[in-house]
Length: 385
Image 1: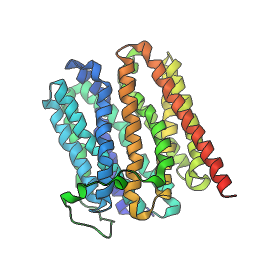
Image 2: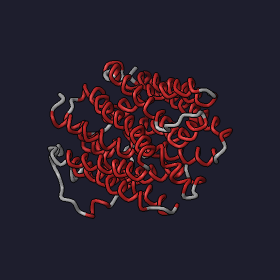
Image 3: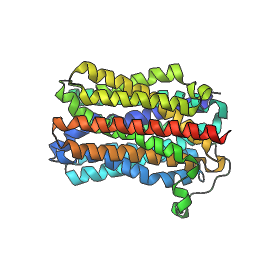
Image 4: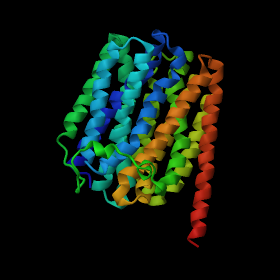
């Protein structure tokens, strides 16, 4: 099942995720040095806003011109934007660049998920999504730690250049991959004309709602963890991301087939419970022990829910509109992260005492998704008689 094309895709994803995640822990201080501390919530919010806005287009292009070109475009954006950061020294320029950088994650993941669905049998999609997620999570784990160490040892500009190099290698790998879309169209600007039905795939509404609720916590984590790390005396602001991603990797190795065996919704119920507990711990913890415990629980949750939601979206979608369905799921992901990042940055406002409520709200939204999943399971059981 796992042929050369699949492993090339995994390697490309590893480099891509390491590239854009590498700079996350250092960007709040970078923006603050320009005099823009009040805008740290926009670091993630603008990035995810563009990613969300580009999803309908990436979904349509994935289903028309092909999976590989769309993936390559996403990596190219990452490569170019990373090279530009060292030359931006004003707040508005930085925020504009973050907005443009968001096109990278707005395109590549959609086409990647569609590519996997093309080459993997239906009854192994959860497992395959988990395996791909291992490489993606490894990149997201190693990236922040590498970025922080590069910044500590050499300064922030070399870190940006390394991030760009990672994205460039990701592109070179993609250029050697075989296209899986059979009926392809030539690129045309007419393809950017989006109809209402291109924006949202109603078949995956359940996935959309759950993804939004659980991804809100990621926006909060990405925005507040660097400052919480400093408050607790942790010098490397990327270590939380490393710990939670390692936990995510471990749970994927152990439970990669779980949703194929036990079903998508039962696995999601477990993951949302774990997420709610982890975010609640972050709210009341005042020690490094609670900090690391929350990182592990957050990683366990995301290691379960990300591949499971992807597989569930593919299950519910029509093969002809698979790109649209996956784009809909990613719109929810970006919307959740973006709203969580913007709101938590605004609420935090540089005051450590404001942090706990942001984590508690994340926990409540995870519990809301848990309630919806329980209702959905019972509703489907009744429908089936």
